Amino acid sequence: MSLFNVMNIASTGMSAESVRLNTTASNIANANSVSSSYDQTYRARKPVFAAEMDRAMNNYAKHSGKDLPPTSGGHGVQVLGVVESDKPLQVEYNPNHPMADKDGYIYKPNVNVVEEMADMMSASKSYETNVQVADTTKRIFRRVLQLGQGQ
Image (cartoon, rainbow, N blue to C red; front, side, top):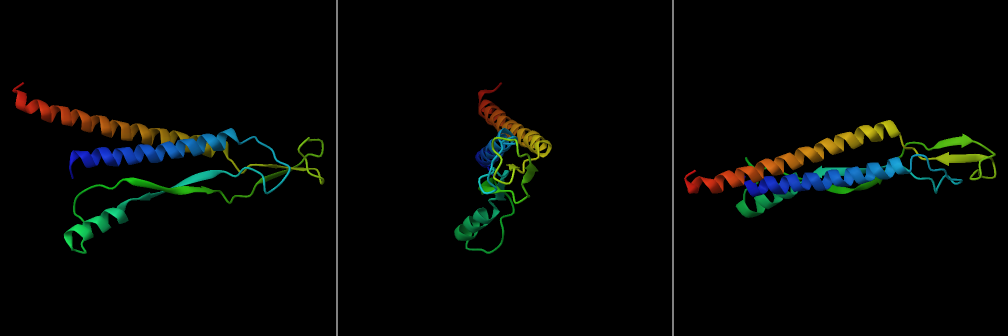
């Protein structure tokens, strides 16, 4: 694996964690929204990540003509999509609320703010770690370039 692969893997990690941070921010922003309809109520969203292992193995098999998996190299992460949570919504009887339906119920999102905060901190730390990997790789590149200068 070359150092360029390290930079590519770190960039896929940063991109994926960025999507995770955006969905978490969206969930927290909509945590206290209220709707008068069950179908129109905001639902928590989660990104789905997948290792790019399949793509890497397919490329290896295509170029080498072998069915064996590669023995070295890393694999980035891919965002397959963002899915809505199927947890039940919060239904509250509040006939005096301006958004109440004809039966007096309001519907709140299925967002757990504590879980979202934990998810946000995890995504933030993962993003920082990928930045550190890219920074360390950049320093290694710089040191390698300085080897020929006799310093």
